[in-house]
Image (tube, rainbow, N blue to C red; front, side):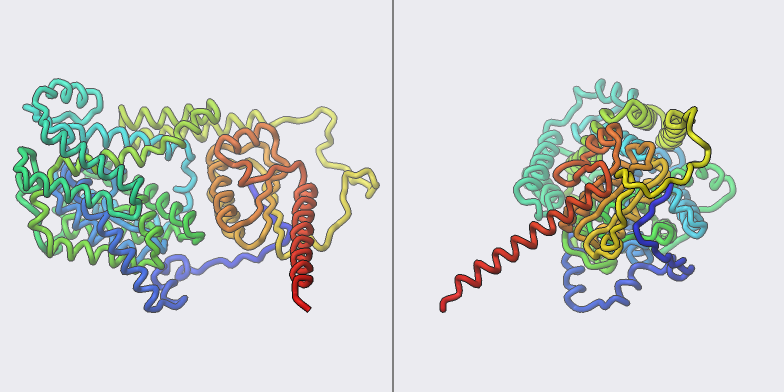
Length: 590
């Protein structure tokens, strides 16, 4: 797989210090002033308001105490922003890890979760220093969509008990089918007040998201539910009745309980924490890149995530990872750099110190409602349907990952999905490989005949500051999608017109189509005309399925045809400007 431009570019090989220098240092070097700090102050407060109820809800759903989620967001979130390789990453407890943390807590208790978190931190640091972050990007797109949707289903099922206020005589099973059967038997014990609290909470979140998207809908819903529960003395479980409240300070740092037996017992869980934490963090960083046009350093980010997990474990927190929703909120709130994430952690600590007694009134049904909304949003429903329609191979990888995540195990789902993706790639390559009977092994020289096959050299194109042509050669699949997408993103905003030639690409998969979709979205935001040339009918169908088509993208048969269209549009625009200037001159009174 290669990407070639019309002009060669010299590449600078970064040093160790450049690779692992936190983005905070980069931002400070660029010049950080009072206006930037004020913007980060506002965005940090905005994210903290969102993170406050989410951190507690995720910790409770993970089988831990609510304060452990806050410790994670305060300590881990601060370290992620301080040392991370992404300008806008917000770290903390994530919904994607609820399943793994809950299973670990069930098997090994709270101390087992803390030990596994510390070990995951060491694994993440090692992965970062070994520069394995690049390889994590090789996970096929259907796998990420499949396990994310599977996690969403599991989170939804895990909140049904609190959502309905069901009381169970025995412990709630972890597996999906036994869980649903047990909850069905417990339906007669459902609490009408809990159902009402959850319903009102969901209604407030959804309504405010549509009518007032800038308002903190989650915090408002939880606050209204807490006030209603207190004012009406509703018979529902709250943080106070189950956990006794939340401390108003951080605990003293202590090392997790360590022994060889304990390490051996939680080792598989620690590896799963590290694997999913790395995937989720880098996905979150990619989302931030797509929204801002910046580029993160994946290995630096992994090292920061590792240190953050160690810090979280020292204060009794759970696994830290990048959080996509809070990171997107941070960008939309106008953050300028990592200071926003650091301030978000400071604000959370202030909330703990000031408002901890009020948290005792928060009903668990309201927090369950928050996680139900989170699960609905993280399910990537549109992407799921698109991949089902894309091809049988992508649909197979997606469904295998999705179903194994739900009914078997998350790690098993990812590994099987990745293996199926690799097999699918080999199959596609085999289909594309062929030898023509009369074709020579080495192409013969051709005369410069005027038969139309070779166009005259246009020197103006090579030096045109407004047009850039890139040629992609070789199979464009999940293993190359990240690298090619990075190159295309890095140059997509430097010209007024951008031509991507795929005539030498035998096929592309859904991961590559998703990368092209991000490039098209970026070009649209920057007002750049994007052309794709040489795409076969099959390739066009894949791209169109993933939203890569008119009006964002124009397809042309050849580079020459695309460049001709660009020149014609430029000449038309210039003629229009001249005509407008002439009309304005004639209107000047004499």
